[in-house]
Length: 506
Image (cartoon, rainbow, N blue to C red):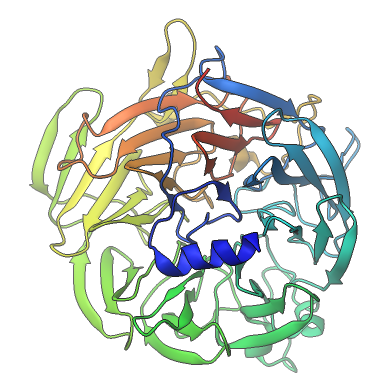
């Protein structure tokens, strides 16, 4: 019954009041919610507004899912010092959301191992989904399972993901009785791919593209496979057309072969998996596919596109680099109407975008700045922010990337679980970052080094007054996360490599 209420809330309002956060994109499938105000200032280092912290034995990347007094998250199966850090198996956790106590765990097997703590994903990258009666855990390495609230398995679906490279490969989402994932169409052919080598001659490249898959939430059975390819780097998003039909916006084409060409953006109907329309663009689509009943919001290299949701026609094309305003949040220095370089091919740090009202926000790619473009007028602004916060007495805001404190990528047991040295970076640029969330009027942007920027999303000008706070998720150099925030009832939850954190007024 509670799930029916949730569905009604999603259908009836753009932003509902959040008593639960049932999946990665929240109660409204758009990373936005309203409700009791959470703290805007906190510190894990000194304990300010931290309700509890629960260390977990191994690292993981998933966001925390919250329903009532239950919270869910995933980690890798614990490794030792001798591990090759290619772990395909994960553990799903159920915690008490009010105390952080671990209530039970379940295991999810994997078939194709990937490196742990990668900057684009690992086996644990997907947030669990819950409807108040069941929870679904996802292993990017080849399984998904449904469990009741006592941890008993209802069903387990195992499959072979595509080999070649790590990737975020779509945050699963649930609408009604369908769970939407992104998987390779031909699982057997996908196993024959080899990194940096061409698709075998006897394999149709389209068979080893990745596509939207709809899974029946009650049985784990496949319902449909989409018609248009979906890039492993794109995050599809569900919403409703003006006539009430549910659909999914998604992109194709990426930086690694086999490429789903031509590059483009599509809208697929949720009920049938049939393609409503597709529009060609020229480049990668490593972002969240935000849209509403009127418009689909997209990027094409250094431009922002506004498309008609019904037809896919481009209504507006807006430059993100030719004429911009930029303000330094630390000094207040500003320049107006200038050209800047925000990224060679992409304007943003991957998956860091969110649409709020008339503004499309994102983290810039080539320098530490929060950007936004007005979807109606094309006005583009950037707020330069510190690259890292080193909490302490006093706290130090580190301005330049070259001065940032390098992360040690160690789990709670002191074992370094990252093989890719890029994981020791800041989290700006070439990385599948955590998606920001909006609570009431405030945006929460976490980055990989554990720094969080709190922004007034409705500020008339993106200047130093719009930067409400810069907070920490732990000591600089010892804190790592690619997880988004979760929110419910005035509290925020975060998952780092070492622990789950609950933020609330104390």
